[in-house]
Length: 167
Length: 164
Ligand SMILES: [Zn+2]
Image (cartoon, each protein chain N blue to C red):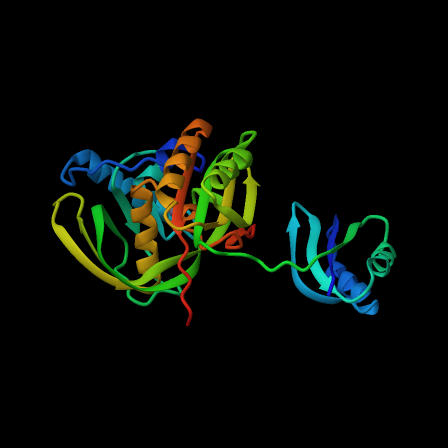
């Protein structure tokens, strides 16, 4: 079944998630995977759903108001492929241009696929935490290259295995 | 006393071991305790946080709701974790990272060895729960590590609530 990839961005307010979810439910959209967060006061929602034609979902979201930026696109279903080992990368230091670009390029060069990433700027402190799916046997190389990049950027970096126990 | 906040080199540099009988270390220990008590909500403070790269920290979790075993207010020099078990996630903050908190997995039962300032007497301290967490956090400071280096994932970082 075709899926819809939807993004919604706008100024945060109480009830915004309920409004978006209701609008989609009203046109028969079934939310599968979604993530919603606030970034510096902006409400952001990214989701995959199945059900209605893209045009129906789009019309339903547009009706929520002009301050919301929405996109709807039909996509082919494609399962997540995680074939490696889960790792965590933390980077923190003084904010400067290009930290995310430099660090993520190093991760990609080692064959690491970033599966989740958060950055925060608070005062002068910039923080990046990335979850990485890394092919077996590449940890040493990635740690080395991250250390080189961190020294050039003047930031601190740690790479560690993300153990996940099943309880 | 102005606390050092991240980003700062002294917070990210592994600190030197100290001679616990050195009068300067004894003064540093007193200064740490005074600064901790003068900072509302502060349950531990390491020398790098007041700008001194030295393996000295203080802890006082007395009366904290998450504490079980407590050893009152104390200072340790050159401390090492010699046993750690019962790993548990928990929310953690830091006076040197004033705007963020994070979920960090720590051992809920630890044995720590260190030296007392002044006498230099070796101490072995066995503790659990919140005091164990505080000790691991402070020993990390002495190793140039922040809780940011140990957060449990990309969604384990939170803005700190502002208490007015
Ligand atoms: Zn701290």
